[in-house]
Amino acid sequence: MPREYKPEEIKKLLAKLPEEIKDVLYAEETSDVVYGSCERNGVSEEKAMEVSKYVGYVLVGLLPPNEFQETLERELGIETEKAKMITREITRYVFFPVKASLEELYKIEVTPAGATPTTKPAPSKPEVRPVEKREERPTEKEKPVTDVYREPIE
Image 1: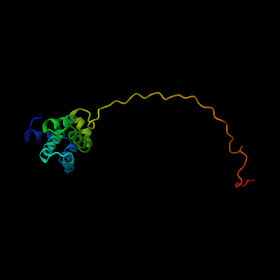
Image 2: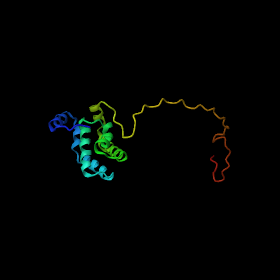
Image 3: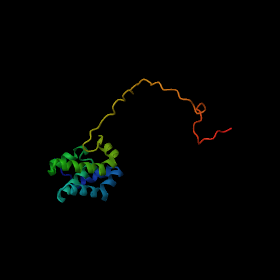
Image 4: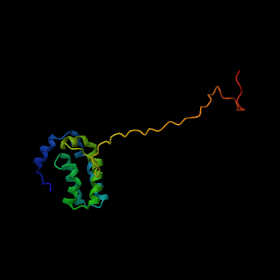
């Protein structure tokens, strides 16, 4: 269970945050995304306030983004599918725009909910097929004029 933090502790953390994260933290759009996602997934307003608190914890560095969904399920009792949908929306619209700052803050790679970090596969060798022998075609100059609508140029 993430512990409750005192306002003084939060203020100290806020002072160290990059401006990009502060902007997202205080943006009205962030709360719109959180409450809209909770509403679409049938989560009560009281729980939506708690979800908002945990979003804030992620943004200030107290809750790693990869533990967000699990926290919603465990602490708020939100069903797995609903928590997954809420996490997916919040990750896409709130966390992902500040991905670089969050990665720097947590020293981890932030990935979309449900996705796992992958490495690029080794490039495969192209398939080598034998070249088919083509029939030689005459060039334009060698072709006889058979078009009745063309006039010969002299």
